[in-house]
Amino acid sequence: MDKLHKFYCTQEWRGLSYNSKIAAGGKCNRCGHIAGKMSELIGHHKIELTEDNVDDPNISLNPENVEVICQQCHNKEHRRFGNKKNVYIVYGSPLSGKTTLVKEIMRQGDIVLDLDAIWQAVTLQEGYNKPNNVRFNVFKLRDELLQQIKTRYGNWYDAYIIGGYPDKYERERLAKSLGAELIYCESTKEECIQRLEDSDKPDRWLEYINDWWDKYNG
Image 1 (cartoon, one colour):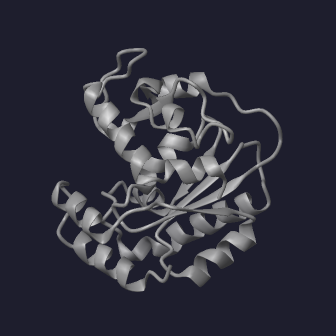
Image 2 (cartoon, one colour):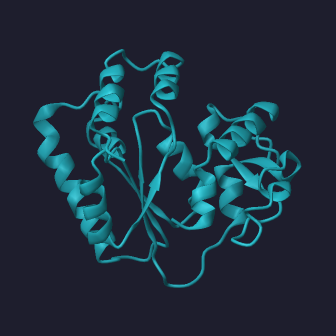
């Protein structure tokens, strides 16, 4: 994992980003858009973070260097050039913040493969409601997208694959197959359970969290 992605996974940055969003009142500092939820906003460094300055807390962890912007303003801020396609597998426990993390680091023109999002797109059900009779269709779509990512098909810039992947062998095998880097969404079991208690997700998500940590092998 490169230094920038590793930094964005740290508890220090994620805490600073979240506190900045709270201080901003859930509003974009640029256009004034009021987000429906915090995950729609992004903590953005005014002085661009680079491999050379990411270890300097006066830049990377300085609240004065962080502005809160919406996805649209974030897209206007960044443009990608060049033909290299990087692939990242973002993994971790349920409710560890994987999707929020990807929204923080992705740019317009990237693609994201999130199996839960595919379920919702196909069934129009909530993320935890997965009718068993359409599993074949959902996984067929997932496999097709994985193949496109593997062959670097299309004109996208970078690709992010979001999943649990608690088994080390499984995720390393997938990473090798796709030529991808692994990004662990750092969390503790207790933090994930607390987020569940603070959310409106059904109680069976506790089973999902416990199952992930039981299977996680580092």
